[in-house]
Image 1: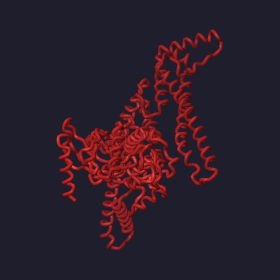
Image 2: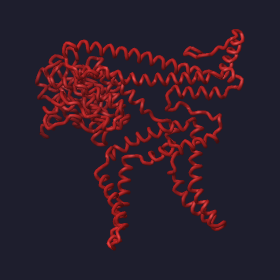
Image 3: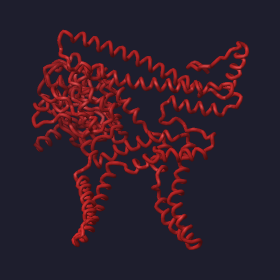
Image 4: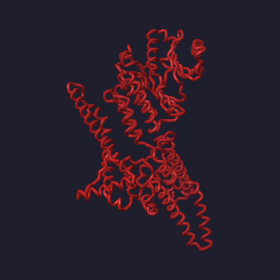
Length: 616
């Protein structure tokens, strides 16, 4: 076999002499061999995919390879590996494409474990964009799988490769039905059954890829190909929610895996939009909050390690000068009042940055979630056998120590130290392994800061914070709350007389905030409800009532989309009105106050000013 591969390499290099210099083989599949080469004229690395001569002798297969390679060469998208040229050289048929330095998604997951949900959502969205573009050009990939997704080392960008077995949706003779093409573990039910395929078949395969990326395993496995194919057609996939995948992301993947193509996303654009919503839920928290939850809100710096020694020395000095009681008071105060004072001062600094106690819940929750994703790569999501064993040893050790204390027999004196050491050793070991899976420090400080004690410290800090402290720029709060806070801050800086004239402006701001929040909540409900319109009647058979059911589903979906558009517009109007208030300068507000005063006097009735998106 090695000699045959070497002979093919040498013969192919002879045929390419002067144009390409082959370096090594980098891959081999059912439709060809891939070589890393250098294009002599442009002095650039390329990947060359060769149709083996044994297959190129088949005229139909040769023509199919050329036709589909030329079709793929027309695709131009940032997330699709570009094909530079499609050529024939004697008995060799090949195409040259860009060489991307990176790993396949398969290699990435096998070597480093499942992708964290935030990274997986980004990668999958880029793949969805690539498929959406290809489908818009009339091209179906037909073999979407982790091996055909490259993660570029330099940028992390996902690129889809190997449209070599893709065919035009129209005019791909011999490929539009009746032939099974693809990889069994990633084939759609319609591919398995030899039916005609379209872009929704790629989206089913995409769902299988997403499942693998998030869990590190395939949803359908078996010892025989026929067993796997049967599961693709008949079995629902295992739940992603049980694997700890965020709800919106899990919903997007599971909808792709619907057996009925009508229940999947109908386009790659729709899928990418849902993945965008999943990403927006996991935006990074602002730097001030991130620094607080990671460092400033904890007593774990290098100074905290030296402080106990300094406190002991100080208490000893006080004791030598003033006696035991002052020394004890110094020690107690140093262990309680000083750390609390440090934390209150850090809360005060956070308040001066424009954040409040209410921001900490989301900040700590985000930090713990992200840390858990990272730690799960190494420590896993579930306790290991060793961790369970150490917990058992710890419980048994301390239990044995307690029982030994109540025994009056002399042998208990020998067992007590052994039991006690076993309990301590097992407990420390289990704690170390638990820390690998969970950020216990963040969880502890999160409970402190988000609880009553943290609320009290922020209250004390607020009493020492100047009222005129400027808030930070936009935070992770919803846009309407961030803009409303800025508007209220500007209102507080107005002269007293102007504030009196515009005294109902804060009420207007609060009403706009509340309306925007209601619209945002309703918008999320509608976004979640829309996908369900295709799955509500799964239990009904296909009979004479099917057209009526489809018609009802379509009407429901249309009504939901119409309401969603109205809600989106109302949300945009409310935010625009808030933005108008925020952007108004104190001079403009002063003019409005004078206008209102004059209008009130001339009309002899109270007028209220309600901003709209067109107000200046």
